[in-house]
Image 1: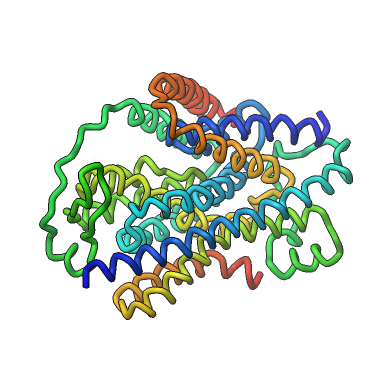
Image 2 (image 1 turned 90 degrees about the vertical axis):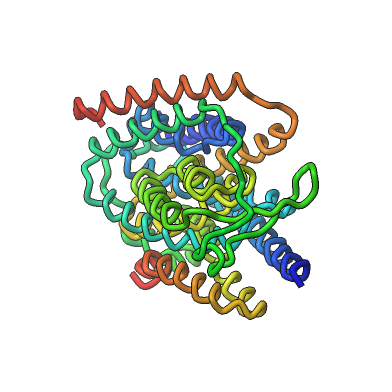
Length: 278
Length: 129
């Protein structure tokens, strides 16, 4: 296979990954890394490096759209970024020393977990209007626009959310994915923030988190320009198209289909990891 | 009073959003240009991503990448675009430090600086290496 053919196929694959990742809210990374490693036999370190950069691109690109709605909470985002960037640097350092088959196995399990999570029905959480002492000191309480006007919310269990964010950052740095799902859990499950605030703030944080580990990957030589070029361009354009479609469809069947595909890929990753083929 | 704070927060976010979009477009254009040039140069050779050997040192540090860009090396141009893309969220954090300072929210100036320090720890290796 020549470079030009390889680049075109990866470009097309990444476009699809970016599109579906944006429609389902799971991000492109979970598809790109299995695609590159399982289909093209790319070394997982290279795949992670390329995916990390594409994660930054989609996060930065989508942030501008969210900003207009004025829902994301920059104080919560900035405070929790201390946790995610710490975790991300740690995760990237671990990835440098971890053997490829171990990374593949961990990746597989995280994939299955994300797939299960994406199918789980979102039960509306009770939003509190009174925050704890930490939340008040850190000014984490705010309001957001809803169908019935501005609604106030207050953050609960800040330490729990903070610890969960360290884990999210660690996974992101280790596996090269945005781990947006884990970030949302930290904010809506632990801190009881409104779902919309959680998702938009999480998106804002993903880019900063990924940048914290990308530096380490680049310095270690894991960022390959020839490979990253089609991946990044594909994911950006796919995600852009996805953000235009999202407004119209609910995409429930897509979510189920995506979960099935991811589970299949996950099993393949774990199998290849255990048999040492990756 | 509360309304006022809310408003300036929104302004911060709006500028941040524009900053991010500009970063993505500029770096995307660099990657695309470098990529086309790269495919013209090496399009018909065989890719070698199967085994990890690490990128040559000229694509690992800012100084070396700059040097390559001046010599119009296609891979260096792509790498420059990738580097710029990594820098967009960092620019956002730097901007937040300034914005919180203008708002006189010193607690958040410190929080933003902590985040910046952690990222700097990761990026600095690339900048000085």
